[in-house]
Image (cartoon, rainbow, N blue to C red; front, top):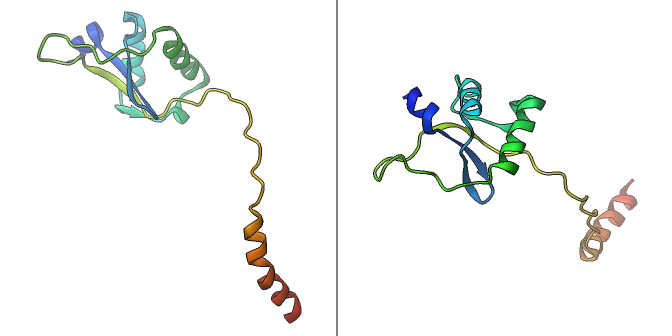
Length: 117
């Protein structure tokens, strides 16, 4: 099985849109086999900084591909599955303003609580 992984293995990255597959170079496949040697699935949080950069580079350079087939009946073996790719830095989302109707609904309870104390 490891011979097939070395020759044509793919890395599966789970994204919000579904699984995506990356077909790395031979040297990178060797490294990924070592990375996923004990666990077939890893969350992105357990990867080191260098490993995260490698995954980001693979995602950027290799482009995602459909799962390739070795032959007409068999899919390419999976080297490992990265459960969630780290989010790309994005702009800050502005804080949400409170809904005015919530304040109106809570006001009678707040006033009742102040009268009791």
